[in-house]
Image 1 (spheres, rainbow, N blue to C red):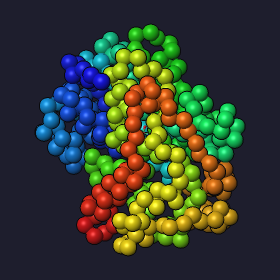
Image 2: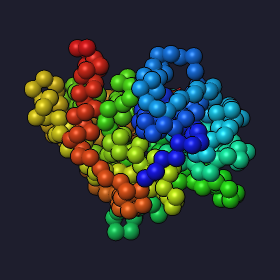
Image 3: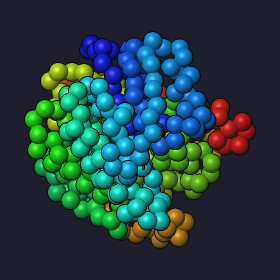
Image 4: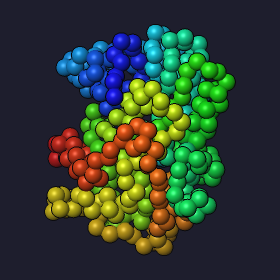
Length: 353
Ligand code: NAP
């Protein structure tokens, strides 16, 4: 696939886990990347991106913008042919879901896409949605045709009180389809990743992906992991999917980008041979009744409804469109997990750095 480096592109959330790799691949291809960030003066936060920019042919330019500040993406978007909209908070334990999740996801998408309407150079917007815009709970699989999640399906069961992060991604993606449908100049291509794993450009990421994998090594799950079935994808593979979505002329619609239908137990199992001697890697799944009883006591964000409708239930998604339309190949789960875990050890996440 040919990356056209002749015009600049904009990447929202460039300081984030997923966007970091997208920016890296763009800079390696010689692209000029416009990076609107909340705090362009925060040298620590931009350090890892700047280091990549120093050793690659591309250029990165920072702008100040906020998802909640209307019109703030105008300067960054000016002259760009492609907009990657990745910025959206991925956090599970929030006090105020409306303010901390739904507003930045929904109003942010509206803000960025309405700016695309006003910016005549924009030809394509690649939106980072999620598999959680496709399903709410694993239990929803029982209602899906053939018991497989596909791009045809939408999450109908999440709400502000039940799975608010999933709800935020669903309403944001719906809004994006509404906005693109009202005009004809630019095209929307949507990426729906499952849980993202693998090393960050910055080893100190704040995405919930880091929190989860850290817990496989810090003793949180030493009695066993919840029997959770889910999809997983490597952050490097996912970033390649975004690049393909941006530059393949025929890319269109939604894409499930998920390398593996897996479980927490299987994910932890990939770490046992290499790290099991030195870290309390979980070796078994907790019985569902015990998870149901204990989860809200240990972590108030994991409700009994969430346990009932997810633990021990299968999760199967069809990733064939991503392979067919975006040319995706997926690296082994073990590689994503060990590269991620090793990065955490090296950066002192478990206290030895
Ligand atoms: P992340 O590391 O937390 O990145 C989120 C980015 O959004 C950060 O750059 C953050 O900027 C920015 N952001 C948050 N609120 C903002 C605001 N009000 N104004 C401007 N920027 C704001 O999370 P991630 O895991 O990379 O997630 C990136 C995207 O992938 C999200 O759309 C997420 O929903 C999606 N996704 C992630 C996963 C996963 O497993 N990680 C799975 C499926 C989909 P600051 O640096 O300023 O905080």
